[in-house]
Amino acid sequence: MTTWTLHTGDALTTLPTLDTPVDAVICDPPYNSGGRTMTSRTSRTARQKYLSEGGRNHGYDLGDFTGENRDQRSYTAWLALILAECHRLTRPGGAALVFTDWRQLPATTDALQAAGYTWRGVAVWTKPVARPQPGRLRQDSEFIVWGSNGAMVPGNDPVYLPGHFTGSQPRGAERRHITQKPLDVMRQLVRIAPTGGTVLDPFTGSGTTGAAALMEGRTFIGIEQSVQYAEVARARLAGTAPA
Ligand SMILES: C[S@@+](CC[C@H](N)C(=O)[O-])C[C@H]1O[C@@H](n2cnc3c(N)ncnc32)[C@H](O)[C@@H]1O
Image (cartoon, rainbow, N blue to C red; front, top):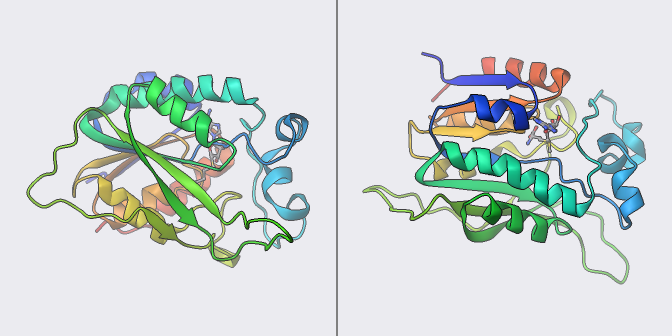
């Protein structure tokens, strides 16, 4: 039985070709963030933004990725277009969970609602290893903006998920992507889809959402634009035993 599918391509042009209904969209788009000024957000690559010393101090090769240089207005418009296609595929009552950081939180809540989802809340992902900042509040959290396609009706055996998640980015051999999410966090999040349901991630990266979905007994559909990362994700999904 095939429990996952991965498309290599741009989510904006691939999503309109899909017609399989999904129970949850769980995605981690390029944040188009990472800088105090517009110039530093729009002129640097993902590697330069999100890896210290541009990745040179990592002992392994983490590929760069594109789509990181939109200003905030165009990011909102672009994300709304993507999420509108996701909304078209989401079953009534299904959920959308979108990762973001503090800078892009307002843009992301706007895009989610512009796409047609009912905004339901913001969950927090806290990273235990974060640099203390003298005289400032520590930036140790990212956010999961979430909503649903209309009313959510709990079934007979509903899940009770937390609103706060803690987990570190994988290190060493487990680290496959610049902005990889912790598998344990994703394993909790995919449970928003019913057992045996389908999870869609249009920004698959190294396939963490997909691996989590398979481990939790869900089917996975992914899209990834980078050929290098699509290969990483394909190998990872092929090596993940479905529950
Ligand atoms: C933040 S990363 C996702 C990381 C993933 N959550 C993981 O744990 O590995 C975003 C991914 O989206 C991909 N991407 C960027 N623009 C895209 C687009 N227009 N369509 C599909 N994928 C895109 C990038 O190549 C990158 O791998």
